[in-house]
Image 1 (cartoon, one colour):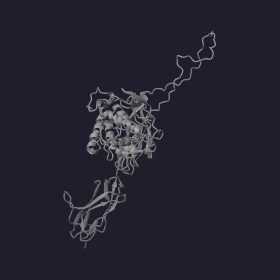
Image 2 (cartoon, rainbow, N blue to C red):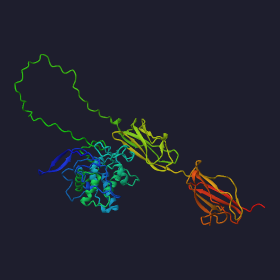
Image 3 (cartoon, rainbow, N blue to C red):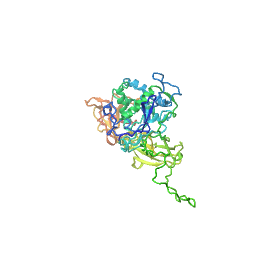
Image 4 (cartoon, rainbow, N blue to C red):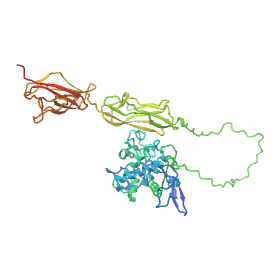
Length: 562
């Protein structure tokens, strides 16, 4: 679908038009299969192990088309550290600016050949999110509310079906661009990076998003000091030459000077709605052309109007008022969903087959920041796991109480071990999503015992007639594949391997007194044959499991009774 733009020309000292400013907030996007008509297909990055794929970082989501002012923030070649009194458009929120510069420094140490300029990140951040909506981020650089693009459902936009179970974008049906640099979840899964060292990769964090965008732009062997490579990098972010021109305009503008402004005070795009969620503006309606009749010229008539005597009574007003459509009611901020936050969820870890001791708990707030009751929250188990909520459900929807909180049902771990996520999503027009890491660990045997109680005796120089059978269990249930060590030990205060007395044999028939084994199904294991040497006495066999369970077995070597 072709992008639609409303344009006006701004003129300088000469009569030549020097810039075009888009009055639409966002351009309509197009799916990779149907690129923008201005796109240069040969500018797309080649697919490869280190190159971005052909889907574009943003999924070709809409973007802000405002252009920089004609007067530059400073003359070329002068300082880029201008005072706060500089051009308002040249001001970049402190945390956002710090993230761009930190990303440039990080790439300079890991990929110096790329020569990434932070002003390129600033230009992309400007058109993608208005510099994180004017720098509305917390002390760690995370946006105060998620910045989400429209659902890429093929209705005027690309068709990209859900790839993250709604973990990042809160949409389990279609993907949306997420965060200040507007990554789609599938691209974030490949390029997402921890930029602030907190151990998380969060597309809503400006430090993480800026460094990830830098890595994406530097993919392959690009040298961004070369115009051709820089253009290819920008086009890989969004396959549109109109997008490239817009980013290029801001890039050149920022190179001529910027200054730092406090977080939250950056200049928002002229067409910003203040909603916190990117969405395409409708195309401007066609205006009705003005009448060609001059307002000062009376309409032509073929004959003078007929003279009508004045009415004897005043004209009565119509009994039925004209039908009008009342303006839509403004939602009460106190009753409008605004945000979703963690309400004290602990570490989500459980052993296979057991219930999690912690439960996911979240709190909904209204637009004023107060708790909001009666808000629907959908909890979902996401990832490759057989862990489920009570009743075997992977998704459940509950409603917050008067204090704005709601707690998910108890999770029960399945048999599949490993990591997964639990998401909580609230809101319809502007959904908010939280993601919680969870994991299931394998059962570890806490007990090991013999499967019989036979006395184990042998004459010197013979073998023990009975084999030692054991079972490793966890809370009474046999644990398969448990590592077991069997060792002939001394009876000293600090037992060590006994080099005398009974022994096992290795594959070559040589005596060994320590074996590493593994339990089979149901935690059962039968030890190999045990042989007695010529020294009579009572000896000890110690059996231990990887979980720390211990068993000692008495072995007697004695001559048979006369």
